[in-house]
Length: 125
Image (cartoon, rainbow, N blue to C red; front, top):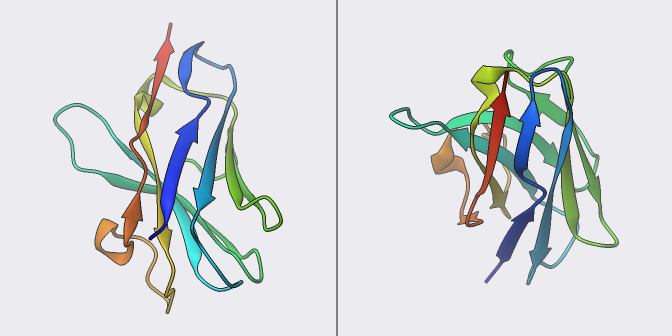
């Protein structure tokens, strides 16, 4: 059983930065992938970014490419999401997710087996 705990959300002005962190406990081995999703009120949960544990290969949604950076620390079992140049439309609850058996799919919530509780990110004018 993998447990995920997010931290780092909060209130930030448009154009500012925030860093989210996800601590994963209970995972073993060097395989699998981690993802970040977000869900705004009244909208579906959407893919933001993902990274593989072994090679560190990264994937981004078009809406965040060039502004967000995902990284992982294998020794600490943590995955970070550095968010720069934040926009009002980035406001959402951000979720960390784990896919221990990564086999190519990363962009849909159903690709992931474990989820964190979410952390709120609010971007203001």
